[in-house]
Length: 383
Picture 1 (cartoon, rainbow, N blue to C red):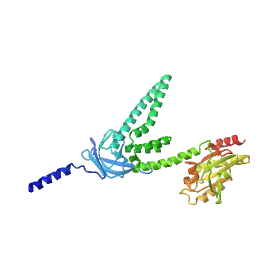
Picture 2: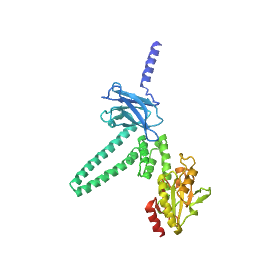
Picture 3: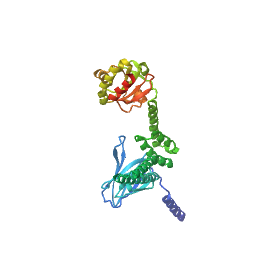
Picture 4: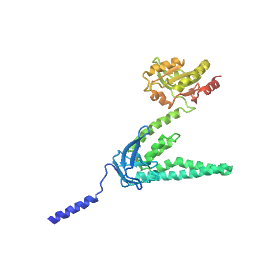
């Protein structure tokens, strides 16, 4: 009996040693060869204002350091090491991983044990290859320019355009090839924030992701961003030159509802402005001059105020005072809800002053003209 119990205990011990422990958080082992004891290592993330904030700090001892914690889902962090230049983008998951620090180039450090970080490293390597090619072509272009070799310059410009196109397409290609990898979500989110990005292409690429990715917390966040972008894209289409301006109505300073269709003339100017907007107030004298000159010939103006920001204690009073001070004698409406008002959203107003010129049928024929350009266009239409 004693032999049986002893044997059973040994079996249980061996079994427990061979059982893989499932992690409820992340554990990062850092190998910091060549880095002195006492050097601090930082994990940082970005807040809502895109500013870096510290998440955790570790200290190198005997060329080792570690981080331990928990994330709700895979999340992008940045690792910094005192006395080492640069940073290492790293995606933290609730798993065990190892980082081999390159003390000469932190960005070249290697992350093991994470499928997501392997994708991140692969993408950066591909992008580095394209960057290296672009650098070579740029150097060759300078040399060709110095020797006035026009034929070579033309060929190199063609090569440079091709490399630039490859770099622009690389994120989309990578996401399409890694539709089940969390790094694809991070790439898509970064593309959504870029200016001049093909947003419809980003939306289409998101649709091709694995369903498990789209169902993740980050996937749902990106979907919410996409839904907002769809609204913007639809507003952009509605307010392109050649389109009929969307009808709207809003309260006047007297509290009566006034619509665009109520005031249209031979030419109509929709002017988005606000009492708090310095550039708008500086442009108002020019609009007054144009209105006084062309109102009798058929020019109508409707001002849409975006007053109502949090710094205004009494936005309506500020709006009415600005109308009086600037002698704005044309029609005025406002929901006093800043950029969140329905008309601002309908017309996709991202900044002010913004304006639209309509013909007699309400078709948009010009946008965002100011100063002499505004007067010249109205003169062209009404003189």
